[in-house]
Image 1: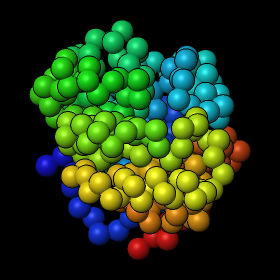
Image 2: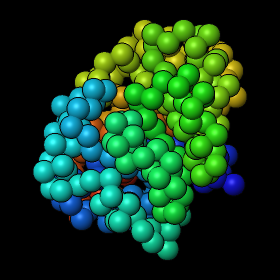
Image 3: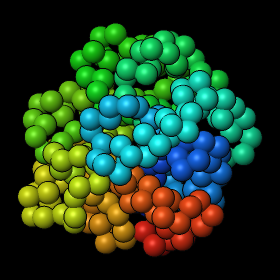
Image 4: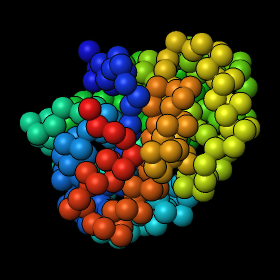
Length: 256
């Protein structure tokens, strides 16, 4: 069974951490992955840096810019991930924009994901209709779960369609803003969380955007299976380096 599906069966709220590959230093990828797993994280999202990340706020944009300057490329990332399954068992998801994947070759990219034991992809700018018509069978061929995003503006009809073509979890964006720009969750966001919960979707939801500490993690997971932290982790790493990642995780989620 795909590691994502297996992890979603866990009886606790799930914490996913996003980091940008090649940041703060080009060769930090493996250590970050290993330390996050040791710290008790449930999923890891490996950000494939891109020069025009439209959905990302300034923190992740800056980390992408630095990673690219450091020399990070799609080819380099796959080289770094070779043999990673000899060292970690945690579900690994690559998050990136479709342009670099298209340039690399979609099937070749999927093939490399399978060879390096990547479990899933999050591609914010790949429309679900295009995926369903052109790429769904290809992703399935290489054992990849594709994760789609929904927002407060996504209609119930659209959400149900996304749910019907999904086979893992749904990335529930907490607001319509870019990553890293939210501070806490207001009443409107909580109503949105309840609305999605009431739809009784077949795929569990994991909340992203605006989660930075234990309080926001607990709020986000009241109606969802888990939550994703990106910008807050990038800021922590930028300030403190990667020598004490466990302290960040422990401040978010009580480990069992």
